[in-house]
Amino acid sequence: MNRSILSLIGFFCVLTFAAGSLGAQEKPPVTTHDLEGKEACLMCHAPEIMPPVPDVPPETHAGRANETCQWCHAADSPMQTTGASKTSHDLEGKEACLMCHAPGVMPPVPDAPESHEGRADETCLWCHTKAG
Ligand code: HEC
Ligand code: HEC
Ligand code: HEC
Ligand code: HEC
Image (tube, protein in one colour):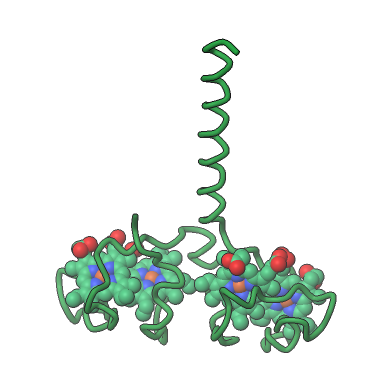
């Protein structure tokens, strides 16, 4: 094997790796149906409850309530149009996110926007995954 073939193989390995890590940040799938009479998402989407309705992935979705689904799955949600920033700081002793990020409480800490009303501390890291 000559050198250029080896570097070509190396190049494809890097490409595959890059595609793999991009995959980890893929957008949530969009809700494909209308919502008329379908507010109780888990009535149909809870694991194995109503085949062939696609199941919520049990590992990632445990503990997520019906009120939260459209935060991520609505076609016009900020998660689809903007995406969430990474948490830029360490988390040691900072579990109570809203203590600092609730609007106006601790300038100049960036405020959680209006869209976040009613979101509890336990939900923040679903979307704002830790940087690095
Ligand atoms: C009455 C049963 C039912 C209810 C209630 C329901 N869904 Fe669905 N959902 C389905 C079915 C069936 C499909 C697959 C076919 C389709 O798109 O209609 C689906 C598809 C989806 C998909 C696309 C999954 C994929 O594989 O791309 C998402 C996301 C979704 N639903 C989210 C929701 C959310 C969020 C709610 C609540 C606001 C909800 N659904 C309520 C039956 C339901
Ligand atoms: C924090 C964002 C977020 C929330 C909240 C959320 N989801 Fe998801 N959902 C995702 C992502 C991202 C995926 C892709 C797979 C994964 O990460 O496990 C997904 C996957 C799914 C799938 C599988 C689709 C398929 O093609 O297999 C269904 C169904 C679904 N979610 C429904 C729901 C329902 C119902 C709720 C509310 C109880 C909900 N989701 C709450 C982000 C979210
Ligand atoms: C003690 C106060 C404090 C706590 C608690 C805290 N943060 Fe922060 N956060 C900050 C400050 C200050 C910044 C801006 C400077 C920086 O990145 O360190 C910030 C930045 C961020 C950013 C980046 C915002 C941007 O504009 O890009 C995100 C996302 C974030 N925090 C999420 C969280 C989450 C999620 C939690 C809870 C798990 C949390 N924070 C807990 C003080 C805090
Ligand atoms: C469903 C996903 C989701 C959840 C849960 C969530 N956020 Fe966000 N957050 C976003 C998105 C998307 C944006 C940017 C667009 C917007 O909504 O304004 C954002 C914006 C922010 C901002 C403004 C700075 C920036 O990075 O744009 C802060 C601060 C923030 N979120 C903190 C929090 C805190 C604290 C919690 C928990 C109480 C939380 N978020 C829960 C998705 C989420």
